[in-house]
Structure formats: C-alpha cells, structure tokens
Length: 224
Image (cartoon, rainbow, N blue to C red):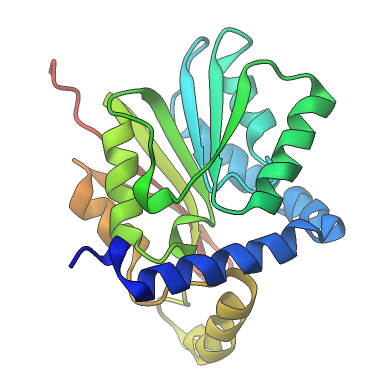
C-alpha cells in the first residue's frame, strides 16, 4: 500500500495541519523566527544559484517567510510559488503577498508529499524546517526532484538531533521539543532521502551543535 493513501498517513496529515493552523495565529512567534533565522535562510537561498527571471518553489512556505528572499533572487520578471498544507499558513502567506503587492508570488494549498505541480517546471526549490515535519519525507523529496528542471537545485534548512559529542545528552529534550513544536518526523532522515533521490547532496553548513544544517541537492543536467 502506498504510504500516502494509508490511514496512518492521513492521521499524520490531519495532525500536522491542526498544529500548523495553531501556530499560524502566533504572529509574535513567527516574527521571532523570521528575525532569528534570516541569515540561515538567506544562505540556503544562495545555494540555489537562482537568476533573474527564474521560477522558484517554496515547499512548506508557512506564512511566506521566504518570499522576500526568493523574490530578490528571481527579480520582478521571475516567479515564486509557495506550497503549504495549512489553511492558516496559506492565509497568512496570502496576506503578506497582498500587503506587499507582489504580483509574481502565488500560493497553493497542498500536501507536499503529493505536489500537483507537474515536472521540470522549477529552476530551484527551497524548504526551511519543513521537510522533516511531513509524514512521508521520501515522497516529499521525490516530488521536489520531479518538479525541478534538469540542472536545478533543492536547498533545505533542516533540524536534527545532536549528531556527535557530549551534546548528545540533550537529544531527548531536543526530540521532545521538535515533536511538540513542529510535528517532527523521526522515522525518516531528510539528508538520507536527499542523497537517495538526487544526483548529489552536500551539507554546506551546520550550527547549534549540529542540530541545524543547510544542505543542497543537485538534479543532474541532462545536457551535460
């Protein structure tokens, strides 16, 4: 049975939606997150090597936190498409678009494990602390791969437990925090799935005892 059609998957989706709908209304929290992670998210965007006129995909876009950074990269002639499962998050993201008058940014409410986006459409894809909160990390990564044009990149800012050293003593607390706050999927590893689905994947930066990292995955250019 396809995991995306199982009752467990549907239960996880519903739980995730409820959780992110709850957090979508906490504007002070998202303001803090946006300020605290801006440079990390900017670094992730830079890994996409986007150019003016490109089309960028923001997976798990939340309230549109990455829209400004992606718009800077693709310019007024490019486009940004944000996807999120939560109606509350899509509402916040749409409000942000309308407030700024961004005509080249759009949102789609959808399950990231079954993105209705077609193939070879995007010049780059971004996900910030989003893939690890989906109930099927493998399907999410595979869909990102399929949505990208040959030669494009998928950059993620992700979370994990402390990978080594004395800091691992903190992992039980860290895991509980991830589960409570972000519906963290501890059964699948994001970077492992990036390595499996893409033609190359690299962790380019790690911080906070290694619990946060930026990774980039490449889709091979068929013409080379």
